[in-house]
Image 1 (cartoon, rainbow, N blue to C red):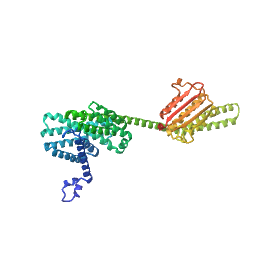
Image 2: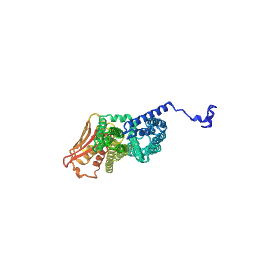
Image 3: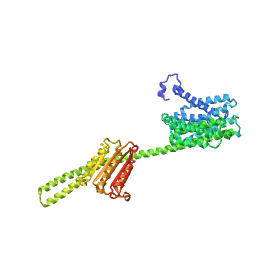
Image 4: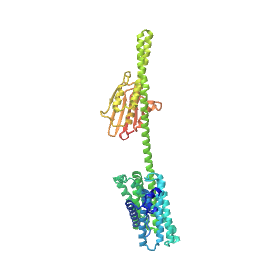
Length: 531
């Protein structure tokens, strides 16, 4: 406390007392809630024990680590109170266990929870969704380290109090370690995945498929454990189903159902595990739950990573397409402001020169006039092509819709081409994105350019069909046709059309033969028209 603050304190107050603060009502209520939850999970673990003192898994280990990981290490008093209540009840029912041994056990369990939560925060960060293999690996490392501390301290405490002898130390330590580890790997992932977004998790699992999954897990767990035949592998198809369809939330819930079913049936002397000695029965159950939990957690994490990578790749492709389109629009604006204006000025100056030459008269003037007329025609043609390019890639070219854009393009075709083109399409605008409309328009424009340049056709037809599940654009002509198989590379027009179709996820088919005309068909599924 600084001197400035000390001067404002009451003269009779001790300086050290100013740093002490009574806990708020919220802190007291939170600690009591954590203590009650800890005690409740301990009672749940005890109901599934095999003997009066042997539990296959210890759920409070997972709940304690989850509480301090999610809410902060400052809530450790809640764990301390819950553990104290559990040990007090244990001392009343098992008075042969010395208080010193119980105190050592409590110290080990407290260290387990605090170290486990601290390691989790360091290894996987806060609020992890366990949808990455690295997070699952960090979870296992944190849990393994924490439970090893608890098992070691607890075993030493029981040995020092005379509860066990030296010969029993390896088995006792192994049972303690695997019980806490299994409990943590069942309860901790369940809490982390479900509390992160409970509404979303519940909405996914309460579907018909979700109910079928949980029922299948319970049924297969019962069959695989209750049967005396080696059928424990039956549960893994259901866990694989959960990993692929429901992710970490489905996997953790399925693992919890498997653990409850397995321990409950074995505790009631049913199944292959129940025929073993108590140590082997406990070991078999623990290893079965651990292997199932680890396999399912890693599988769901890998599946989630692959889906996330696919989503990120699609998003990256979409952003690249948008950036490319924006760059083309910028180029179109620059061409409009520079080259197009220069061409327009060239046309004006050419006309002015033609008028001056016409005024002079004579044979030389006639020839100059013809040359200037040719220059003017070429300039006008270049200006027309430039306008088409700007219309396609500029900011306003497709605003009226695909059908209107193609109709306007057809009206701008040169008369000397001698080509009659009909455009058939819906009267209302097709609900497509700007990117998709631009690419479809580019395919239609490129197809018509090929008809004008190469097909020697007299008529062509553009048909646009918009259905509930697909959009179809067909460009058909009655020209001389060609063999598509003979054109592999080097044809810029065909390669451009295929590239445009690929960018928006459309199928492009070219049907043609010499002397039979050409049909170019573009089919776009509606669900992929976001391009």
